[in-house]
Image (cartoon, rainbow, N blue to C red; front, top):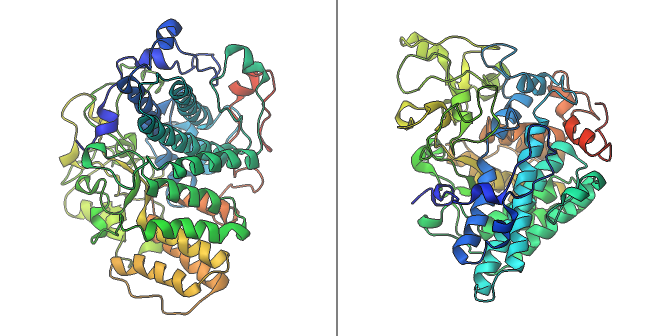
Amino acid sequence: MKKYILNKILPVFALLVLVASCGKDHLELIPRGTSLELNYYQTEEQLFEGLVAVYDVLQWGGTSGAWTMTVGLLNAASDDCFAGGSDASDQPSWVAYDNFTLNSTLGPQEGLWTKYYAGIYRANLLLQKLDDAPVEISTSFKARLAAEAKFLRGFYYFELVRYFGSVPLLTEVVSVDEITTITQNTPAEIYAQIESDLNTARAASELPESVAPAEFGRITQGAVAALLGKVILFQNNDSRMIEAANLFEEVIGSGFYFLEANYEDIFSNQGEFGSESVFEIQHSSNKPGDFGYGFAAGPTVNPTEGNFNVQFFGMRDYVGPDYATGWSFCPVTPDLADFMAGDPRFEHTIVDANVLVAQGASFSPGFQNTNYFIKKYAPLEANRASDGDVALGWGTNQREIRLADIYLMAAEALVRGGGSDLTARTYVNEVRNRVGLGNLTTNASGPILLDLIYKERRLELATEGHRFFDLVRTGKAAQVLDGFNPGIHELLPIPQIEIDLTNGQINQNSGY
């Protein structure tokens, strides 16, 4: 069963978590039916259902009145894509992130804040229940679930600190009485907690190095090492780069991951959980839903387990071979198309609508249309859901961390940390050789080699949602992103509702 984690629907989901909305504070995540909740989590099955709830947040795409798919949002914020859609008023929060006209009430911040704190609440609740679990629950079972919950809590905080900087650090379930006393912690404190969680998970021998197909989607040791290395890399402390490189090299040398022989296979449905996949966020078309689930005035819940990016990225009113119609968000910029021209990855990254139209296809140009569209998550007619609203039911998994990304992060960390330039070039060449490109034609080192690595990252990982944070952490965002103001737009504004509902205990980010 490929979709093991997300296909297991929680029978007591409504009792586990109330995600605050409609004027309630988004940190106030209080169970409904508390007396029932207190008597739950008494068996391995019930505890595992709690773990499923923690994983579930990974694939949320509609939260707090906004579309919160991170791949699409980060593509729009980068120079890989524009916001797109039907017109400039289609999704104002996406357009604001694209052109950096964000303010405390305009942007994707409320949905992202709600999403990740919901995941943190669920992780905290499960960890509490594991501590209180009956003695007959096996120690190894509890240890594995705790390691997975801490990995996920670390991942959710990593997202929060990258988007918002200083955020509240909550490692226990928050009571109603504590809401107005919550304050922010510094990024250094958040990163310390993330590393603590990941190191604890890493030390758990019960966390496997690999999983059987029936458990695809569950965290492995390789995913923990990869995320920990990435967390260290993103803190931009050159004195710790060899530490990050060692973690990446642990994954590379583990023997559990290999580059896919054919680049085009990575994003096929058949390529899900392939040899290159280290951390993959599952989606499924097996939970049909429709816009009646609170979507009438914009998404407020997550009515399916589908990947909404897929519908967003398709060509509007498309008629022709291979593809289903979509909503024309994130049209690829001419800058990226020109940058990738002649690279063998172009045809597997970008849909060139000019070619399709010349062959008789048609579509309706949307806002900021360029005639170039994302191919890696394109809506393929062959993958359409068979039930529910097709737009909400695309089952394409999100490739969050894959081996090529790790090769390139390892290369960067080696160069920045004063490690082996030869090894760094070897890692870059592994990525290049996979697509039929020759080795780097220079024995470059230092800044010149770093520039080559960053160029390879853009070519290899284009439209996968990595580019914006790569530009921010390398200090290049202001050079290439129109409207980006350094010192402000590295971060999103804190949602105004959080500031108001904590009586100003939470402070707004600079510039907003």
